[in-house]
Length: 314
Length: 268
Image (cartoon, rainbow over all chains, first blue to last red; front, side):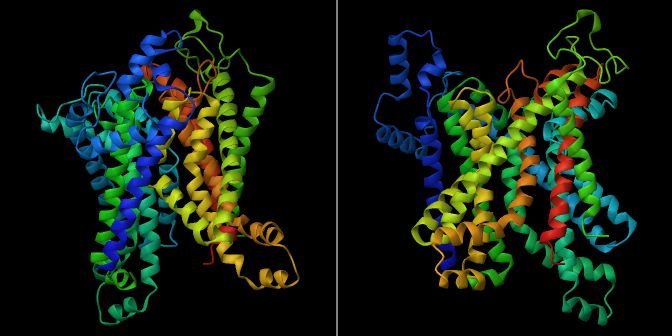
C-alpha cells in the first residue's frame, strides 16, 4: 500500500513536470508563435489578433493555468490549421494508433518469447550466431527504411497489400488488419530484436539457479523446465522492459504512420509540427506523454502484483 | 582471442569506411551534388554512376557520401554536447547529493518519461528547422541517459578507498571529482558515446525523412529516402543507397559499442 501511494505521488509529480516542460518549451524558446504562423510579412494588427486568439498576449502563468484547467476538463483547445476543436480531431485517430500499437505489442511478444527461449536453449551452438546476427540487424534498420522496403517487397512485388491505400476499420475490418500488419511489423522488428536478447539473457540467468537442478533431479523434461519454471521467472524480469517499449512503439508509429499514410495520432502530430499548429502540437505532446506515463505506472503496479519480492522491498 | 575482438574489427571497418567516404566528399565528389541532368534521370547503377541517378538526374553516389558528412557532423556534435552537459549534471548530482541530486534527477526523469522524438518535435516546432536546431533537439533528447550513467559512476567511486585517501591528503573537492572520480566513469560513458552515435544517426535521419532535420539543398540520407519513396518500384537504388548507408553506419557503431561492452564492462 505504501508502495502504491509512493508511486502515485511520483506519477503526479511527473505529470506536473511534463506539463511544465511542454508548456514552457512552447513559450520560453525564442520565437513568437504568432510570427511563426503568419510569417515575417504579417501586419501588426493581424499579429495582435492571432496573439489574442492563441492567448499568448496574457501573462505566462495565466496562460498555463488556462491551458491546464482546460486540459483537465477535456477542453483541448482549437487547432489553427483545421479550425476545429482538437478533441474532435483526436476522436477518429486515437483508435487507429491504439490498434496499431496493440498489434505491435502482440507481434513483439509472440515472436520474442519463443525466439529468446530458443536462443537460450541452443547456447554455444552455431544457430546462436544466426540469432545474434539477426538481432544486430534488427536494431540497425531505421523504421522508415524498413517501411519503405516492406512497401516495395510486400506491396509492389508480392501484392500482399496496396501501399498508400489505407483501409478503414469500419468499412473493411479484415482489409484493415491486412494493411496494418506491415506497418506493425516495421515497428516491431527492432523491439523484437531487443526483447529477444533480454529474454535470452534472463533465461540463462535463471537456468544457472538451484531450482533448475532440483527440477531436473525430480525428472522434469527439459521443455517442461524451460517453459514451466524458467520462463515464468524470466518474464518477471523483462516486464519492466515491456513498459519502456510503450514509448518506443509510439515513437516508431509516428514515423511509420507517415510512411504508410495511416491517419493516426502520429501523422496528426507531424502535420501539426510542419504546419506550426501550436495548440494542436502542445496538446498532442501532452496527451501522448500522459498515456505513456500512465501505462508505465500500470506496468509498475503489474510487476508488483506478479512479483511479491518487490512488494516487500517497497 | 581477446574478448570482443571480432566486434571491434567489424566496427572499425564499417565506421572507417563511412568516415573515409565522408572525408572524401569534402575534397572530391564524382559529380556536383546538386547538378540536375534531364537526360540522365533514374539511370541504374553503372560505372559512370556507381549508385545510379535519382529522378532529377543527380548522381546518387555523390549525394550519399556528402550526406554521410552531414549526418556524421550532426551525430558528433550531438554526442559531444551531450557528453559535456550530462557529465557536469551527473557529477554534480552524484557528488553533491541531497537537494541538487533530487532536482536534477526529477527533471531528468520527467524528460525521459516521454519519448525523445516528442522533445525533438517540440523544439523543431518552436524554432526554425535546420542543422543546429536538430543538434539542440537531439542533445536534449540524449541528456537523461548520459546523466544517469555519469551519476551512477560518481556514486560508485565517491566513497571508494582511493578517493577517501586522497581526501585525507588534502585534495580539494574539485580535484577529487575531476582527477579521481570522473576518469573512472569513462568505460561506461565511452560505450554510451558510441551507442549514442548510432542513436543520433537514427534520430537525425528520421527527422530529416520527415522534413524536419537537415534542410535541402544539403543532402541527407533521410531526405534522400523520402524523395526516393515514390520511385522505389522503378528505381530501387535511389532508396537502397542511402538506406543501406544508414544501416552500415549503425551496424558499425553498434559493433564498436558491443566490443567495448564485452571487453571492459562484462564480468561474465
